[in-house]
Amino acid sequence: MSRLAIKRIQTLVLGIALALSCICLPVESLAEEGEQTDHPQQEEGQQEDGEQAEEQKTEEQKAEEPQAQIEISAPSAVLMEASTGTVIYEKDADIARPPASVTKVMTMLLIFDALEAGSIHLEDEVTTSEYAASMGGSQVFLEPGETQTVDTMLKCIAVASANDACVAMAEYICGSEEEFVRKMNERAKGLEMDNTNFVNCNGLDAEGHVTSARDIALMSRELITKYPQVHDYSMIWMENITHNTSKGASEFGLANTNKLVRQYEYATGLKTGSTGEAKFCVSATGKKNGIEMIAVIMGAKTSKERFADAVKLLNHGFGKCQLYTDDSAPAVKSVDVKGGVAGNVSVERSGTFSYLDMTGANLAEVEKKTEVSKDLSAPVKKGDAVGYIVYSIDGSEIGRMELTAGEDVEKAGFPDYLKKAFDRLVLRRLVRKL
Image (cartoon, rainbow, N blue to C red):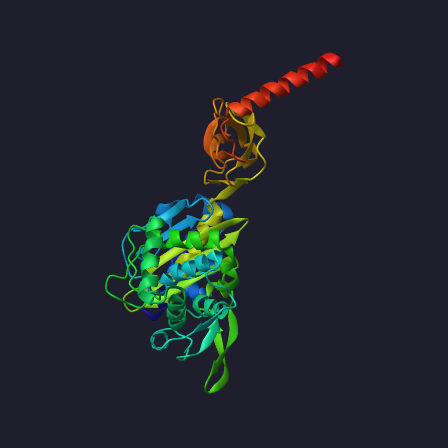
C-alpha cells in the first residue's frame, strides 16, 4: 500500500473520531447537568468539602426529588422538621450505633433543664475535679481546681466539644457523672428514645453507649425547640476563653467543630461527633423561611461525607416543605358551664398550631372551625379541655388544636344558688321600676 493511501486512511479515521466526539460530548454534558448529586467524586473536586454543590439545585428540583433518589452515603440518617417532629427522610433510623460527641446534645439539654429550674445559673463558678480534668479526646485542658462559669462551660461543650467541661458540669449538677448519666437515660426514656443507652456524658467510646439517628433527632428537637438560646452557643465560630490557674491566666482559643456554621448559609448548629467506633456523626440544624430542620448523620466514613450528606438532607427539606402556623386568639371567647359558681369559663388555645405540608398545597386556603363542649359541668379546672379548633384544606382535616379553660370554675353550693336567686329577684324589681 502506498504512503498516499495510508495517509488517506489515517485522515478518514481521524475524521470519524472527531465526529464521534462531537456527538458524545453533549450527551455527557446533559448527564452532568441533570444528575449533579449522582457524582460525589466530581462534587468534591469542584466544590470545597462537597457542601456547596447541593445548593445549586433549584427549589423545584429539590421539591420533586423523592426519598428513594436521595443518595446518602452514611449508613444511618434522619431528616426531621423541628416544630412538628415530622420525619421527612430516614435511612436505618432505628439502628443503635455509637454517637460519639453527639451525645453532648443530651448533656446540654440537661444543663438547660437545670438552668430553667433555677438550680444553677449562667454566672455560677464550676470547679474542675481531678477526674474531669483527666478526660481524653477533645478537651479545653481544664486543670484540677480551675473554675469557669456555667456560661463558659457551655461554650466549651457546644463549640469545642470539650469532654472535660462535660464531666465538670455533670458533677456540678448531680454530684457525680454516674448520677448525671442516670438522668440522661431518664430524660431519653421520657422522649421515647427507645434505642438509646448512655454510659457517659461526653460520648467517648464505651461498651453499651449507643443511640440511633431517630433518637438523636428527638433529643435535638427537644433542645432547640425548648431552649432556642442554645443557638447562641452552637453558632459561635471562634472565641477565646481565659484559663485562671495557679500558673496564672492564659488565653485558650475555641474553634467550632461544626464546619457548616461557617460554610452553610442556613446553619444554626448543632453538634458533631467522631471516634474510632462511631466514625463521623453530626446533628445538623438549619433554618430557612421560618422552617427549622434537623439532619442527623451517623457512621459516615469521613468528615467531608457527613457534612455533604447533612447539607443534602437540609436542602431537600427546605425545597420540599412549607409550614403553616397559627396562634391567633380563638373565635369563641367563652363556654357555658352548668352548675358552677360562674355561668361560663374563658377559652384559651393550648399552643401554636403547626402543619408541615409536602404536597404543594395552597396554605392560604386553610380553613378554621371552632368546636366547643355543649355539656360542660362544674367543677372546671384551668387547663381542662373545652373544645378544639379544627383546621382543614378543601374539606380535609389537616389537624386540630385543643382549647382549654382559662380559669377554675368551682361547683356551686346551696349558698351560691341562694345568691343567684336573690340577684335575679333584685334584677326583676329593678326592671319593673324602669
